[in-house]
Length: 618
Image 1 (cartoon, rainbow, N blue to C red):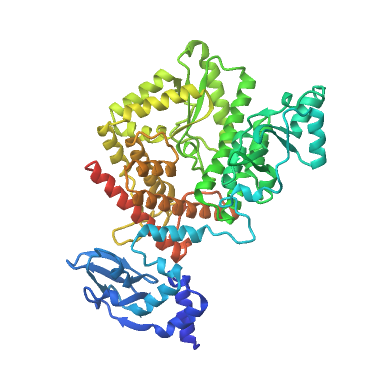
Image 2 (cartoon, helix red, strand yellow):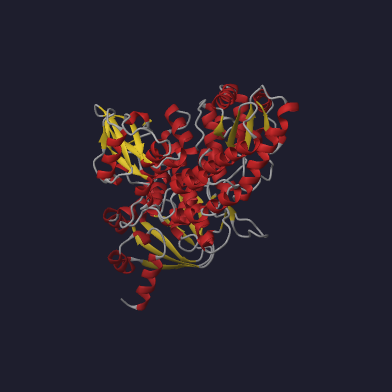
C-alpha cells in the first residue's frame, strides 16, 4: 500500500465508526473511497441525494440545511453525514454546503451496506435509534479482558468453590467445631431437612464458646445465628459484595431454589478485586477514632481507579462507593453515641442527594439531615443533638466529604428538627413552590435512611409522597425547575463550554449533564407516587407505570450510564495523575467515538426534556 493510501487508512482508523472495522477491512477501504474537494459556499449534495453516499470530512467544515433552508447542523473534521438519512424514518430532507474549503471522502451506499452486513459494531452506528447506539457504546466501554473476573457481570454462583458444608441443628457445638476443622472451613451452615436454619462461623466459636467458657456439649443452636442473610445464586457478585458490606458480614449463604447452593466469603470476592469494599467497610467499623477512619477513607480514590480499570458499570460504582460513605456515617454516629451517651429521644440520620440515590463517586460533598422524635424538647435535648451532629459532620469532612456549600447538613439547626417541623417544611415547599422551595425539594425528595429510627423516616417519606400525589400544580413547578438545567450542546450540535477561568474550555458533567437526567427521573417518579430514590430505579418504575414510554426510559438510562461512565474514567485519570477528582471534562480529552456518543446522550436528554415540557405546558 502506498504512503497516501496508508495515510487515509490511518485517518479512517482514528475516526468513528471506521474504528470499529477490522484491519483487513480498513486496508481495503481507501481504494473504495472517492476523494472530493469543495470550495467555500459550494453545495456538496442536493436535497434527497445524500443517501447515495456516506461522507467523511477530512478537512474543513460543512453546514447541513433543511428543505426550508434552515440550518440543521454544523460538522467538522472527522464527522460523517449522508447515508444514514435513508435509514431514518421521517428524516428531514436536507442539503449540505461547504462552510469553508473542504476535503471529503465519500463511500457509495452499496459499499456501506456490505460493510454493515459483515461488521455488526460498524452497523450500529447507522441505527435509526439513538438509544441503540448508546447501548452499543456502553457495551463496548464496559468490556473487561477475559483474564479478569468481573464482579459486575459475574453471577455469585461462579465463585462457589465447593459443595455446601452443613450440619444438623441437633449436633453439638463440639461436633460442629470438629467438622469445621476436618473440612477446613471458617463457617458452616446449619440445615434442617434441606432448609437453611442458621450459620456458625469461627468468630462465633471464639466469642460465644471460648471467651464465655461455654459447654461444648450444648446443641449448636445455642451459638448459631438464626435465619442468616442469604442471596440467590443468580445474584451478581458485585451485589453480593455490596450486601456483605452493608450488613458487615463475611460469610454469605447462596441459595438455589429452596435449597443451598454453597457459601461465598469476603475472601472469595477480594481475590478478584484489589481494594475490597467488604474489607474497607469492616475496617471502618473497627475504628475507634476519626484519624483511623480517615486512613480507610483515603483508600476510596484508589478503589475508584481500580473499578475504572476493571470497566465497572457506573451504577455498580455508585452503589459500592456509597456503601462506604454509609459505613463511615454509621460508625461516626456510633462513636458519637458512645461519647455522648444514648440519645434522649429517638432520631433518624438521613442522607440526601447523591448519597441517598446511591450515586456517589470520588468527588462528593455532604447532604444530610436529622429528623427527631416529636418528644424532643429544645431546652433539654438541644445540646445533645447539636454535639452529635457536629461530631458526625466534622468527621465526614475529615474523611473527605467536604461541608455542603449551601449548609444543607445536620450540623445546621434548620436541618435538625422534630418530625412535626419537617412535615411543616414539606407542606410549605409543596403548597408554596417558590424558587427556593423547589431547590430544597430537589434535594430533600432524594432521601434515604442511613442510621436510626425506621419509623420516623417512614412517616416523613410517606407524608411527602402523599402531599405530592396528584398535585399537578406542584409537579408543573418541579418540571419547570428540572428544565432549567440544559445539556451543554448548541444548536449546531457543538459542545457549549465554560469560557475563561480555572475550568476554561470544559463542561460541568455533574450540573449540566447528570443533574438534568436526575431531575427528569424525580419529576416522573413523584408523578407516579413512587418511593424509589435511585435514578435508574425511578426510570424503571415510571416506565412500568406508563409515566414515560419504555423506550424513553431506556434511552435515559443508557444516556446516564454512558455519561457517568465517562465521568468515572475522567476522575480516575485525575487521581492517577496525582490531582484531585472533579466534574469538569474537556471534549479534547475524549475520543472521537466518545464525543459522538456523548452528543447522542445529550440529544436524548434534550428530547426527554421537551417531552416533559409539553406534558406540563412549559
